[in-house]
Length: 216
Ligand code: AP5
Ligand code: MG
Ligand code: ZN
Image (cartoon, rainbow, N blue to C red):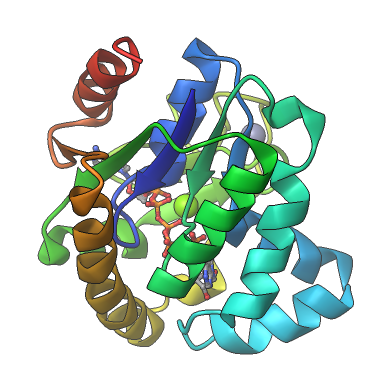
């Protein structure tokens, strides 16, 4: 199954991707995660991406399209893949169409996780991430079972994302709201969009997604 997970910042794309990956063995391809890894590794790509990410702006399309083309060309995506946070512009959506046509791995469904903007601000300000394994939590909505200890790997080392500061969050939401609207129109015309409510609890959102995926 070839999936796009769409949703505004904080909608729960990464959280649901982790659950999807447990249930269906397909790679999770998050451009945001790829950029953060490049920043951590100190690569040229990372240096370039950081200037945009720190302000909550989009990394230029030519950079982003290139890394997705490389990633989708890898064999582990032959039986399916899920894209998280890509495409984010119409230019990226068109590039993706070229890429998936060339590779013969067409998109089968676009899942849009729908959450109100006010809820998103609160989610992003409370998000914490395990530095060791990348598991995402929320201080109040979704804390680790034992305070300060990662459920997944037992680490005590959590961090908050640089771009989750309130002033950056405001810009991220603004930038993404405009482009998301256009993308939904683009994929609606192709009949690919399935909308799921994103403010009904993590397991309930997953149950809705599972219903959709089990039909593919
Ligand atoms: P990216 O990393 O993709 O960030 P984003 O789109 O802003 O989305 P987030 O990762 O913040 O949110 P999420 O939907 O994954 O939510 P999560 O599951 O963590 O991109 C970062 C930056 O990289 C961009 O700003 C841009 O600069 C650059 N970039 C990336 N892709 C690009 C592209 N294609 N083109 C150009 N630039 C690009 O959940 C959030 C919180 O809510 C967590 O605390 C979680 O525990 C909690 N939560 C989740 N679900 C629920 C629920 N159902 N109920 C209650 N709480 C919940
Ligand atoms: Mg994410
Ligand atoms: Zn962990």
